[in-house]
Length: 310
Length: 274
Image (cartoon, rainbow over all chains, first blue to last red; front, side, top):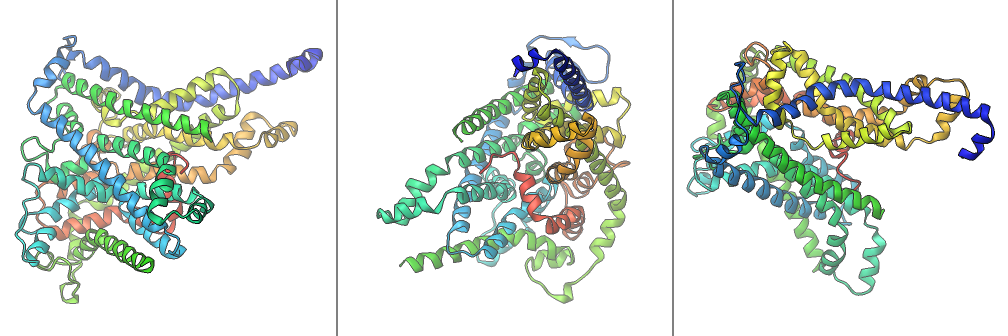
């Protein structure tokens, strides 16, 4: 290609002129996106790292440099370890249950004897909660979990069982917010699993059936391994979403009892808004960003690998 | 035996789907009932219980129309910015050769993973410094900026798939690069624009964190902040809360009914191809 243009100098000049103007137009095209991201994403991200080395209330002019002190103080702040544990319980618990249940539902929806219409109706039905907002889902489940008047306890009483204190029992409240998260987020995983299942060709299943494999064996030895990429994607996206979640669990449980269901995101908000400890809050934000970035990096590596395979 | 397992699995699936829809059923019929009826007969439909008082009360007390206006303003303007800035940058990355564009794309992809809550604290002081506190434009710009990386990712991916010959033909006909973007690529982008609008649009419409932090929730409520403040922690009037929930989600639900396919595609976009 280069040799060809070199032999015709006039064409080369013309082409490079053209290329240059095209390049400049391209650079110009990047300007709006760059300006927006720079002011509202990059600068705040630089600042969150900077603030984490200072003691500052967010308003006054004197920012006191404290080095790594914020990171050392953080573990000694009230409830820090409980909040870490509750964040991990929430993230891993909801991820495991969401992926497991949505896989089962997707398998049930995909079975070959189901016609297309009923499959579409089911898919829409399961997807629906995903379009609601975290605030809406939070308020709805808080009402349902209410001890005296909530629907769940009313139903339990109606069946002759004793009511359960969903929102003020250690351990059980963690389960309560996980159930709400499962209800809220399952639809996305189901759709991704369904797409994965449809990409498995029927010939593979038929071949296995001819070789004498029963349905359980096909499921275990063919479908699950072929679905591994979808499972990975769902585990990663769901766990990232769980680490980011803020208002839905807060509206349901208020972080109670004690600090047992309070999440790190909620603590960052608390430090930033209510108690004006920008330094400590920023240090916590840096920690959370590191955790989420680490999970996302795994996701990117996995995605890259898959692109190589196909 | 085989027939039996099929029937059992169908029944179980149906039962679970019904169970999953109980909360939705509960709040939809609850919105039309009085509090005492919701508490006493949570799942019963009875025309004697019918009331629309919940809605009239909520519309009045929640400043629903001003909240709706603010939410719509933020969502629509942010989407316009996202589409303009995103498609321009996507075009440059996808169609123009150069190291700069590759590096830029890498930076965009890595920004996609950063959670908004991480930058919350510096954004508070930044917005105050810029004089944008309690200003809808502050929310528009922040939402646009934080949704932009994903939009650029989508646009770039789509535009890479457009054959080069089309573009070359346009150049031969004397079209400029800007003209190619404007007259040729933008019309082709409609499906990605739809995907992008739904993905970012739902996120922005349903957002609580950005608007709650940057707007005064009393003077300048958005829908999600309004229902959070109104029904958040000490909710006892269930009927009002359910009416608020329905009205805050209604625009999204109506759009979902008509644009289901795009919704499912939009919300799962970028999660890998199957």
